[in-house]
Length: 361
Image (cartoon, rainbow, N blue to C red):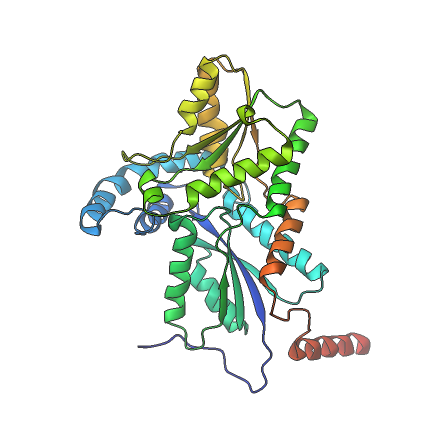
């Protein structure tokens, strides 16, 4: 077996720690060719589509990748920003904000971000971290609730990368933070800010990303963790159970997925006479196609077309300061045992040289 080149080892080399945020991914641009590349990688993952390869791959390459990219590209164009895909923009900002928050608390470490599909690829960023001398890496999948198709897939990619590394760094990977107090507090604070601008609607709809129902019966904890998040948030806000509705969105294919589905639910609420709803997506750490276009446009249209009047989407946590502070506290907890507050000698020597050069100038 051949290994990737490693940075030259130096005797007495100090331990260096990195934190790597990993999100799902996004196409490079809102065009059919870019979507075809992205979807080919995403939908080829056996964690995402649990159909035998011999059956699935001909369908994927013979039908789906011929039809879906153009449709998906049009949806991405509707949310694309001058900085790029919203998911890429927010994830990049989250990593930068987390780095600042941890540095302010006295930690000396590198904080980077990667995508499970698309760019920057997880394997590429891990190579860059090793080239920079990282010997310990905390991997933080940005999925609050664990699912095999999301967090499990990140673990797969991380372990595949490790197979080709001669010096595998110490690795820690976080499984879920669905019940983390800081996360729940940040969600509650976001809703309170939203309600400070206008009174709460008749119903609060908490829409989580869907997964096939089969995954629940196979032992995936995702469904349970979504409901735990919803219950903790409801209790934090002091809302009665009948005010909060949990739904699942983004169904793909003909198989039965976790229910109730978001769009039929909001249609039913409108038909029952509910005139206003607040919709939040707690399972997404950053706004993306599924929140901005699917919820913000498609589900909004379905609610209004069914007789609803006031549809209010509550943005994801993105880079809200209380969320970044909670993320920093959560990260610190998982860094315990790794001394990240001692300045590496090599870094201190470089700092002293820089100071000396500045004094001479």
